[in-house]
Length: 164
Image (cartoon, rainbow, N blue to C red; front, side, top):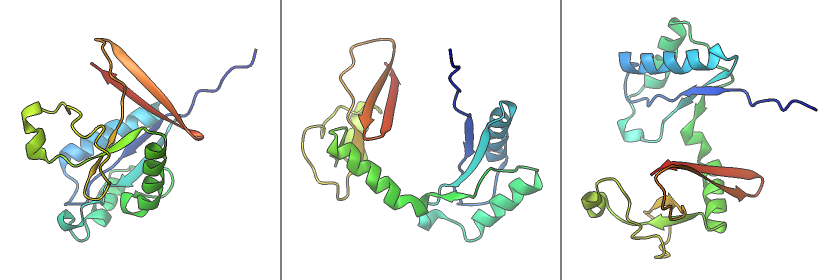
């Protein structure tokens, strides 16, 4: 019998470059780093640079320099979310093509009465994606246990788990 190799653990730290690294972020980076390294895993660095008006000039470099000064070493190059728009658009297109996503045009104000539980107002509305949030279509679960939902999307698996 051949043993199945388990996937290598991958940890990541994804700061938003809206200012210098603060203590809480340093603690989060340390926990993620130690989790990954304690099992021989990889540790990745990803910049959450998707809100340019809130970004502080030089913050990305300052965050990376601070982490390096504390001895953090990440695997590979720094990934910037802003460089991945095409990859995200492709995945969203695949989700739509497989009926696993839909556009939602509800405002936060409209959803306020539902206290964070989306009621499905746009689930079957067929809205276009312009100025819309993209929501994942999930089955109606009538359960009180942990459930995992998997959908094959080409050669990729999307996994959604929820505790209801």
